[in-house]
Length: 181
Image (cartoon, rainbow, N blue to C red; front, side):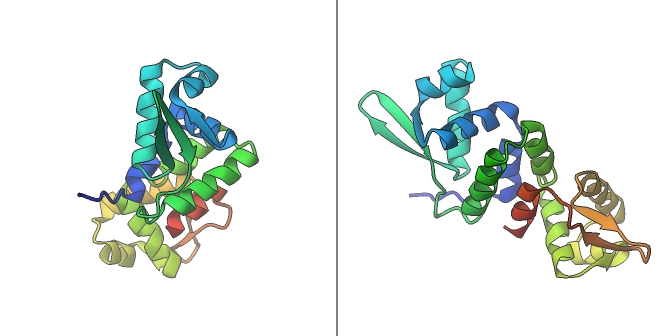
């Protein structure tokens, strides 16, 4: 059997979608739901609901079981997916605080590229000037600055007066959890 190992940046891409977030929020708040119940609650067609649930399950954020004709989804982290538990815990906290989907999507989009995760992991070790960060991450300077710009607009990184890039302390709760994964 082939075991899939979803990457964090692809999981963030799945989460950067308002429909999938609504579906996930419903399942989390109701402990478990069949596809038709989620579709009704989220006012979505069955086909869209099924696609959203399957995408979330493929990222290790939902479990699934069949009961006769019904397919039941429930919020549980797949133990074989390294980051699933941390991401699901961060999303549960965000939903409890009633964070708006736009806030969660904004946080998730900071991490929708593998290079941005690499940059954040490097900065988690120590603040670094761009020239050194470029070498550490194996990213050209123009590409590095594009990614730093995106991370900066998301409140994840900032540059100090001494030209050292560093992680911010004001980053959204979901994004702080994601970059630690």
